[in-house]
Image 1 (cartoon, rainbow, N blue to C red):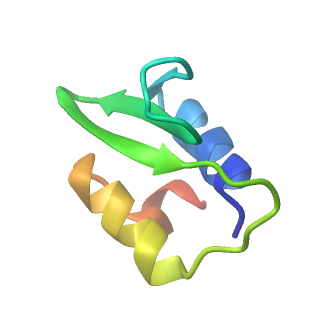
Image 2 (cartoon, rainbow, N blue to C red; image 1 turned 180 degrees about the vertical axis):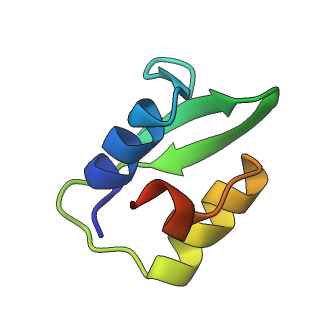
Amino acid sequence: MKSKQLLKLLKAAQAEIIKNRGKGGHYLVTLNGNSTTVPVHGDTDYDPNFLDDICKQLGIRLKDIQK
């Protein structure tokens, strides 16, 4: 999955995405009081385990928002 697809899923889950707060090619994502950064590097395909770790930092699971 690409990071743009993850960001789209997070936005649908009511996450706030701040493009200019992350460092370089990273976006700051906030959900339910938790925040983390999401790397956005073009069309890079990320490992689902890595993306699930990002979601865990936000207090959700990747498989839950993919439905």
